[in-house]
Image (cartoon, rainbow, N blue to C red; front, side, top):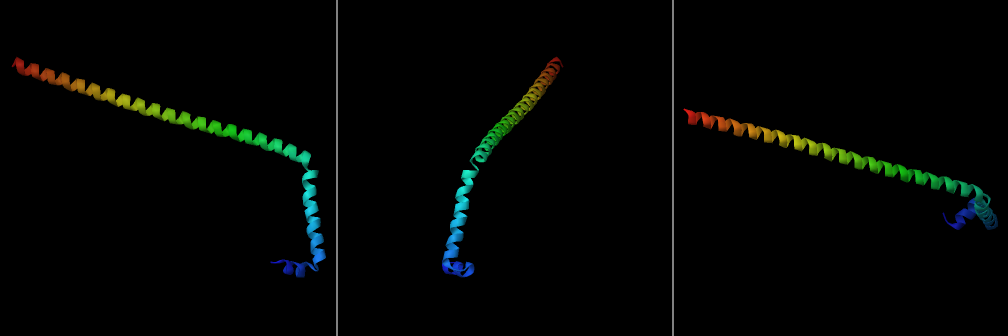
Length: 106
């Protein structure tokens, strides 16, 4: 929609210019009128951002703790498996030794 279409839609050019100027004046007045409210809302936004940052840090910390707990559990499991394997190997060596002694005895 170009300016001529706008002029036809709203009437003559002067009326369109008045409407544009009045709406621009309304827009420019709003920040002046809302400055105290803006400062308060800005403070609230900053507070919300700090809370969000804190929550993100807490989530990151919990993720790290979960990863550490998972690594610890995996290490303990591997340690238990290694210990079981070692005990089984010791048992096999002992049984082999007993068989060899039995053969020597016979």
